[in-house]
Length: 367
Image 1 (cartoon, rainbow, N blue to C red):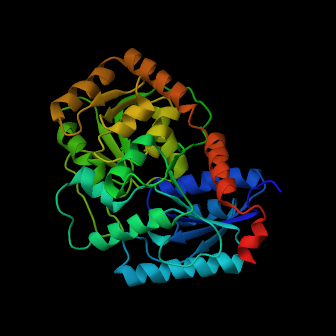
Image 2: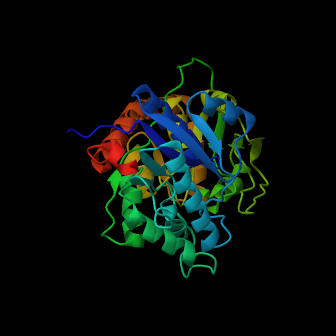
Image 3: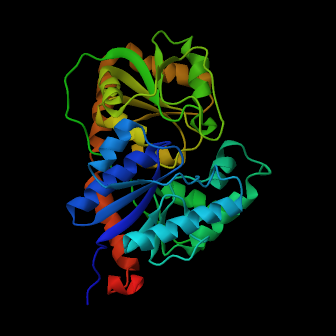
């Protein structure tokens, strides 16, 4: 009997960053191929707009469970894993896709488990801070290490991040690389403002938004920032020179992408960078930190800058602001590259992983 795709998947997600958009794109793509998705949200609840959009695509369950990086202790994380396992059994899922591998080793799962490593504390600390882990990190990192090995399959969004995972957790971790995908908005013809935009979790030190804040008062064009300035883990940031746009809904953020000239991402740590893809789809010129992830995805269209080199950022941003024709050419190259990161390819790759781990008779896994 040939292997088939699952009829129902329990997909975990959070609303904190790009994982939410990834989950909705994947759920919509799976639905088009006949797989029902039950979307279990951990961490902060979705907004009304997020809730409405999710319910148009999948069955939504707001669990109230902690994220792997906000749980108080390993016991709380294990309880959350146990509840997710029970939920999988209760809804008749034939496969579970976790958005954090740490849960995989902390419960007995009734069906195969695929873990997608969107990010993790171990690699984040290694790339952003370095040195000894703080007291609250070792047990979380150990849980991720066990979860990577307990999963029936592990997916990473880039080869660069897969390499970082192996460097942190061991070369024996088997990882399938599937680039994230995003549906592109309709192309619009607008006169772009001579302005720079950045977007994402502004409070996350790994995004290195402080570099843009330092150069903003030296650039002869405004630098705008969209996204939350406070995180669910208590992290917070304040800016002196950036123009904060607030936390924008998808339609408003897409409009900002379409009307500004340059997108800047000075990240020290970035497993994929969905905001960069969204900006590229809208034809923005890209100025990115010179890190392996961005080189893998955007070498050619983007200008690359040493992450904390303020003068280099000032020169590169100024070059594109001063010459709209050069910016337009880079934006066109970015848009063309972005066309290769499709939802269809992401869904097809994910389905192939599902089929590889499912038993030949899927119902046998829940019997």
